[in-house]
Image (cartoon, rainbow, N blue to C red):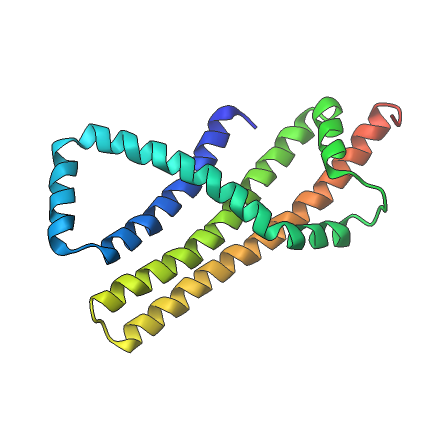
Length: 189
């Protein structure tokens, strides 16, 4: 995967995180403080955009690593269910396919990018739902609005997690197949 695609992936995940961070900040701020902040942002919009992009990229890196760590046990279980070979090293297989697999490697990196986005999106949606509920509660909306927000947010987060699991299964299945093809094409090394 190219550097541009990786930066875009991290920005997507980071913008999602910056959105829920902003919702928490708004929920915890007074109207006066928000008014002053918006006025300041309008006066220096170029600087603010630069700050937001930098914050989004940084948040994207952090969310990617955090979600990778959080989902590692589930990921390992999926890997064991898909790849039945007892002594199979995913890092070695990835490197082998990168070296010998030509187009297979770029396809696998594309699949990995999708699974990372889905994984982080699920967490961002769950936290974003909580942030939205906090903000709505501060605005004294009714219980039905809070409940509907929770249900929709959890449904979206659940969908993202389901998609992540499906893409993860596909990734390991295709990695194993690509490794087998690359091994046989390179003389079984």
